Image 1 (cartoon, helix red, strand yellow):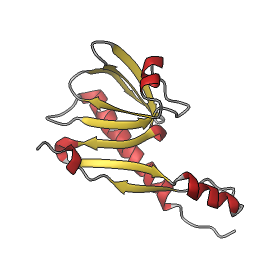
Image 2 (tube, helix red, strand yellow):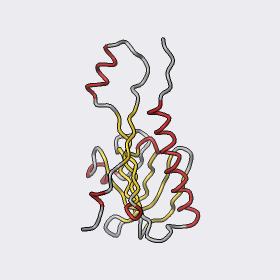
Image 3 (cartoon, helix red, strand yellow):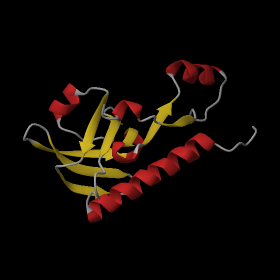
Image 4 (tube, one colour):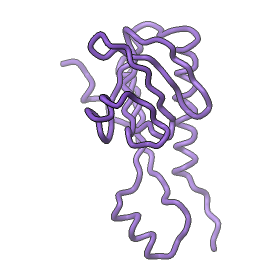
Length: 149
């Protein structure tokens, strides 16, 4: 088998490290200026821990906002936990970095998106007899949709 560099997974690891660093700084020092985050994550990831009513409401993915009211932000090598307010009801969330699909800070027009190959492509790779996991593609998120009009 030919050895190759898996740039997709390396890029994902680097991007998740960036998110970890940013959140760790916010946990220690608070949000600076107008910074705030939209974080979309896969609610089906086995290590995501959210309330049952949130899982029922968001069966595949959920976007949370870390801005005005959040507490207990704790960042580890694997992910982060935070308590957010949902209609005056504080709820703790545990989100592994592997579950994050997008991370956006619209205050500075910065965003990351993590994408995986479609099931169709996965099936094609399985037919090839390749036992390696499918690579992930990384892309920069365009922030036009988050701009205030």
